Image (cartoon, rainbow, N blue to C red; front, side, top):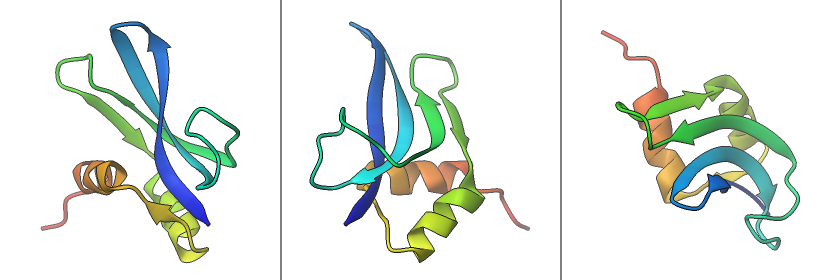
Length: 81
């Protein structure tokens, strides 16, 4: 089963995250299928860059986003009036 989750990058006490699609049986630091965005909580305001179209495509193919990624998708989705 595929999951869309965060993969920690960066150095000690200065993390940033890549949003990746990976097999749920592998560790988050292991191999991944696709990179669909990034998240940097160390900037003010926190930088969230997601390719929402590709994320939706992976969800249609059966990937399940983690709870954190779901909240990031909500923040990154374009606001409609």
